[in-house]
Image: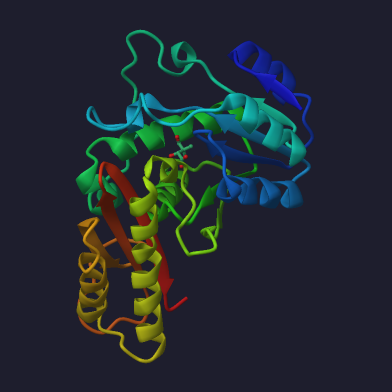
Length: 278
Ligand code: PAF
């Protein structure tokens, strides 16, 4: 497994990789969710590239950029075990050269939900992912369903900018008690960690209600909200039941939808979602 930092080393090694090439972009501190993307990429491609970069422009001024967990030696061991060919750990100076002022923005689908709560977040994501795509030119790129809006936004970007890259989305990987895996779970103290299981419980209850014939978007949102707010350590930011492509909020009877939520436990903000009717 090659590990490179600079653009010049990257170009040299990238040109020796055989196609098709699968890319798994990450911010490091890898867990089984990331590794499931790597495994899928390994199965579907001749070469696999992983990037590790805590992208500063997708963090808001009061978010956890400095505290974001990092452990590059551990990440590299895990990636080597999973058969990755090339790891790129870019430098800030290469990604954002002095005077940087060129951004990739996606409009409507970045406005609600996470975009509403985290202004500027998706501009950072689309800009860095576009830069990774241009530098690496993968055939396929792998993202987790956990960041459901990110998937919608990146699909839109790929379509609009005609990137010849297939976006592959892998299911959410959960802990045995249902909590969706996230690098940020390490911030939770013991009681918050226990309380955080309410997210998957609430979504599962709504999924069961949908399967039993309750297809009313408002009632499903209400059901999830009531379960979350019954947990005293949970501070609910939003519950949404939205169109899976446009992310427009749905009301009344639905045949499908993205049910998603964001909840604080102390200072830790967690997100989770399920797809209904797919
Ligand atoms: O999902 C993530 O970890 C990040 O948003 C990504 C796609 C690596 C861009 O920094």
